[in-house]
Amino acid sequence: MRKLKQALPSIVVITVLVAVWWLVAAGSTIFPTPKLVVLGTLELARDGTLWDHIGASLMRVGAGFGLAVLLAIPLGLWMGWVHGAFITLNPIFQILRPISPIAWIPLAILWFGVGNASPIYLIFIASVFPMIVQTTAGVHTIEKRYLRAAENFGVPRKKLFLQVVFPATLPQIIVGMRIGLGVAWLVVVAAEMIALRSGLGYLIIDSRNAGNRYDLVVAGMIIIGLIGLLLDGLMRMLEGMKIVRWKYAH
Image (cartoon, rainbow, N blue to C red):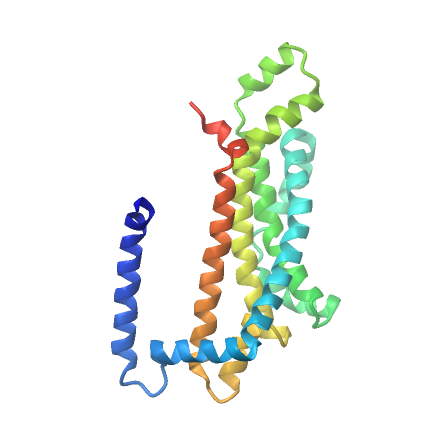
C-alpha cells in the first residue's frame, strides 16, 4: 500500500500526459493516437518482431557494458589506490571522456564493419569512462582515518584493500554503473539507427522509411524508455544490498 501511495503521483501525471496526447493527436493525420500505438505494438508482439529487436538491443548492451565493467572497476580501484597510476592515466581519460560516443561511429564502422562488433565497441567506449571516474573518486573519498587506523594495527595491504577499500567504494561503483548503463542504452539505439538491421533503433528508422509507420516509431520510443526505466531499477536494487549500504550506517 505504501509503494502504491508513492507511485500515485507518477501514475496521475502519466495519465494526464496520455490524455493530452490523445486530444492533440485526435485531429492529426501524422501523429498517432495512443490507441494506434498500442495496436502497432501488439502487431509487432504477435509476429515476434518486437521480441527479436528487444533481444538484439539487450544482447549488445549486455556485451559492451559487461566488458566495460570488467575493465573499469579494477582500473578505477587501481587508480584510486595507487597515486602514480592516477597521475599517469587520469589526464588521458579526462581527454577521452568528453568525446561523444556518436563521434566514434565512423571509426567503429571502419574498424569492425557493420555487424554487432561496432555497437558493442561503442557501448564499451560510452560506459567505461563514467565507471572509471566514479570508482576512482570513490576510493579517494574514503576517510583517511580508517586507512591509518588499519595500518597502525598492522593490517596487511591486501586485507585492507579487500575488507575496507573495496566495500567502502561500492556505493560509488554502483553509481558509476548506473550512469554507464544509461549511456550504453542511449548509444545502442543511436548505433542501430545507423549501421545495423536489427534492434530497437533500427525498428524506429525502418518504421519511418517503410510507409511512414509513425505508430511503430512512437511505440519503439516508448519501449526504449520503459526498458531504460527497468534497467535503472535493477541497478538501484543493488544499492539496497547490505554490503553496499554499510558505509552509510550510523
